[in-house]
Image (cartoon, one colour):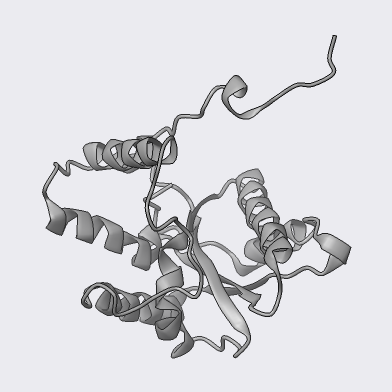
Length: 212
């Protein structure tokens, strides 16, 4: 979801969601996740700082890890383009309207108006397997939220601004910012929440071997 209602979320509910999600599996039970849960004045302060950083010249800020390839290739390029233009179409952004695209991307940094924002980190000394485990935790948070009547939006957009986040949040020296996430009650009237992403058919990504 990319638009949320201002309806507050009780801390006890967020604690329940994270407690359930922490049952996600991890190699040798390392549990390589950490999350900063933001609301109220702290969330607002983070958002304002990130919006300023978002307007800085391109290349000013960089993530500690590469989420996307340097050059996209098929079939990933086509999938990326389609979801982008599907979203822009819903919110009335046309090709070439770069200022509007920039503002839409900036919506990430106000957590799409969700009352709760989360910043996820991982110890940078860990290896790729722990990042896979961290992903299972993120999915578990999203699933648990839905089970409690809430919606989410996981957001890689926060990763390049880890320096900004470190100025406000008590992020440890050995922690890398993985992503952010918006949490709240989805706005049913927001056009962007009508976006339905496509999925490749089963035969495109699976091979069944040894079946009669």
